[in-house]
Image (cartoon, rainbow, N blue to C red):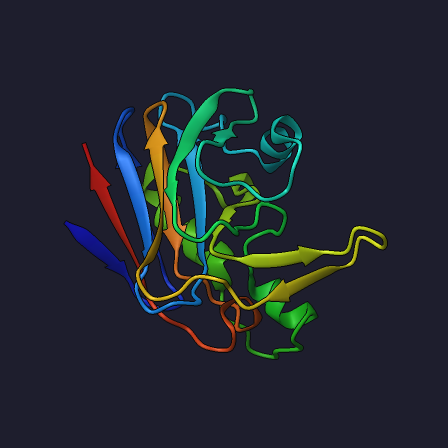
Length: 194
């Protein structure tokens, strides 16, 4: 059964070892921030640094594992119809909107949505790392290192699927940043299968 995450909101749920999580972009050009914590020890968490270090590249796709801060595989990408996702940039937050966009009354962003969604498992806001940003299209200039946030390459119905390699707590959002989603906010859908 597919679940919908409303625009600018998030969800938390458990994913057992061996289950598949499929994240869908039902309308296109919508980012979804994904976090994973080891159910057995919440101090073990998805790690951008470890994953990118072991992959030796920035853009991950089918066949790539996502590692924890303890160098254990948490998830493996088993299907990807887009091929461009981000694992560099942190979840957007009230401070993102204040500092980058100059908002005077900012939305809590993906960071706040993830904190609220993960609170039932006792996961504190300070334990939120860099998320795997499904469908986010971040460009990197190879000479200067300059980063650009470009429109997602995902189209309506695109998806990315992960198999859990341990029992996990998952946080997932429909991203709240205008720039990341080509100027509009849309829902995200997800499905867990055995």
